[in-house]
Length: 96
Image (cartoon, rainbow, N blue to C red; front, top):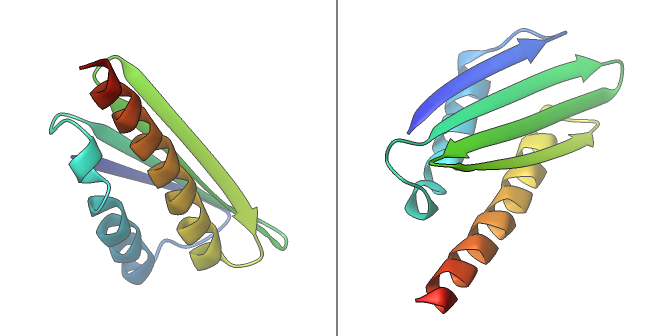
């Protein structure tokens, strides 16, 4: 999977970048190898937002979360994303 991280209003440290990529790799089991992930991180005052957009084949999956800490936002958005992906996989397996 290809990762693209964008950020606004903050400095992207290697620890944040590594954290996001490591956490997102556990979602690869649900996706095609040619999938791409756009990770958008932004800080506006106390609002720290993480948004993930995954393009997998003809499907696009989007999840977004905001909290007071960027790591918490990342964890929440990944949990939301995993729920969406597992639901999608269950539906796909059910059709077979």
